[in-house]
Length: 178
Image (cartoon, rainbow, N blue to C red; front, side, top):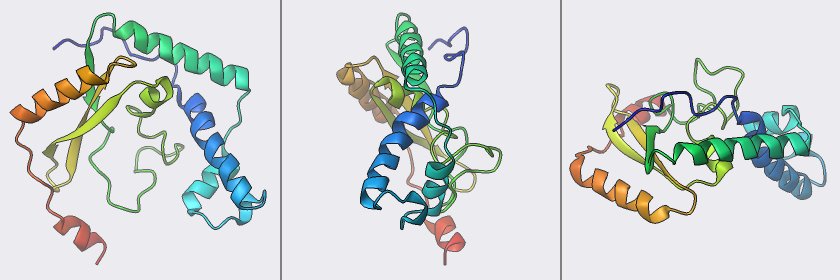
């Protein structure tokens, strides 16, 4: 196991990911809501993102996406698999859209370790590897080169054979949402 010598991304690709992800969702909501997102019957957190998202020029989105793809491609010159936490916190309880400490982010872009690979088109898998003190799952994300799903599945299967992960106790969720 080796560590990357420098951060994977020089700039956060969240702006590009938000445009790609929420742009597509926003278009569909507008179609279904007759063009009026403000009065659409959708989740309030999603509505807030759609109404207040920053718009970025298409050329800038493409440039940021291409830079992200190039950087991830370069990382795979030295590695077959990248491994990292799935999210920067333990699993939040249901109903929490943006966890404490991640204010200014939205439903998706507070999960810093997942969306860059969605943006780049790399196959990834998240596996529960242990439980927090509160009994919530902690995930490990494995990422492979674009198009190399077989290596990813083989690595995940190998890891699964050596890990003993207990299922989370549903009791903390039941106590939070009686």
